[in-house]
Every structure is written in C-alpha cells, then in structure tokens.
Length: 241
Image (cartoon, rainbow, N blue to C red; front, side, top):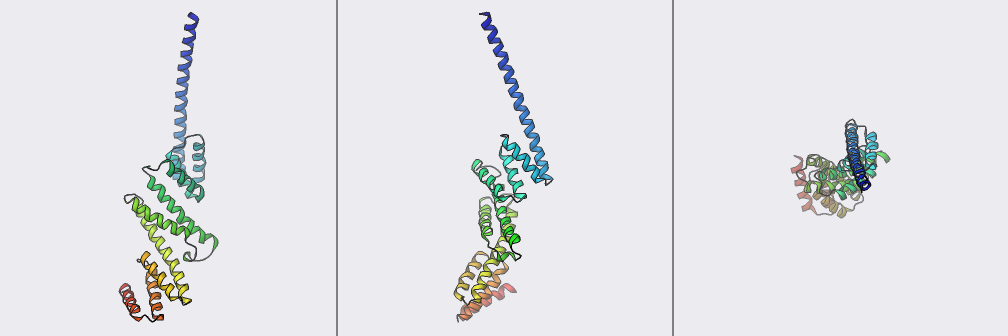
C-alpha cells in the first residue's frame, strides 16, 4: 500500500514537472517567435526584403504562421517582384481570413501586382510606349480597383486606388485609341464610330476622348452623315476652350 502511495506521489511530481516544462517551452517559443517577428518588421522597414522573406518563411515552417506573418510575406514578395508567390499567399490569406479587418489591404496589393505586371510586359520585352502593349493585366487591375473602391469606400487605400485608377484609364484609353486609329486608316469608319463610343463611355475624362471625337467626326464626314459630324464639332469646341 505504501509503495502504491509512493508511486502515485512520484507520478504527480513528474506530471507537474512536465506541465511546468511544457509551459516554459511554450513561453520560450512565443518569446523567440515574437523576437523574430519584430526583427522581420525592422528588416522590412529597412527594405531588406530578401532577409525578411527568409525569416518569415522560417517562422512559417516552425508553425508560427498567423495573419501577420502572411500579410508581411505578401508585402515582401510584392516588393521583390515575386508576384507569383505573392499571389499564392494572397489567395491563401483570403481563404483563411475572409473577414479580416485588413482584407482591404490584401485586395489593394492584389491590384498593384497586376499594375506591376502590366508595366513589366512592355518594359522588359519591347522598347515601345505603354499603350502599344497588350493591356490584359491593366484591364484586370482596372476592374479590381473599381470593385475595391465600391466595396471599401472608407479604406485608407482609397485615395491611392483612385490615383491608380486614373492612371489605368489613361493607359487603357490610349490603347483603345490606337486600335481606333488602325480602323480609321483602313477606312473602317463604322468600326471607328463603335470603338469611339466605347472609349467615350468608359474614359470620358481622358485626353484620348478628345482625339476619339476628332476621328469619329472624320468618320461621319466620310460616311456623309454631316449633321452628326457637326454636332461632334460643337462638342469638341466646348471641350477645347
């Protein structure tokens, strides 16, 4: 009986010792991870992005993988132009934290990635002006930003999003105007008018809109639709005074 009591006593001591050790280990891991996280924040602030990525990924592998780690990884990969991995982390973040208080930031970064991809296409491959390159990513970013502004009107990123949207309108309107000019010089006047109406509807506040009106006027004159050409002349005059 005495041996059983001694056994129980020893077991309780071992159990308590293990519990204390486990708690100390957890505290040590928490302190260690918190130290590394603060270190990563400093690295990001100092623009040492590759070092920050290494440390953040190490923390992620060590099961210290929370929303802050993912957000900082998204930003770091975006800054080093590793857009594929940045987008992968974005998709993971949206699935894991769809109601996150900073989800607006994630969607804004997503649109910035597409803007960067659009610029990368024409900078890397052709020594030509932006409007001549395919705007697949610019178009994607354009609609993303429109949705962003609609869904998150009170976001701190809205002001920047509106500036980005203005840039994209200019970019896309110049591209569409280039197509319109192609139609005009090939005497496809109906196509010029149709494309012109699209440009005026989508990008009325851009400089390309005035040039669009001029080509539409010439197309109506070529088709001998003089009354409409005269109306367009008056609109051009009102917008160039």
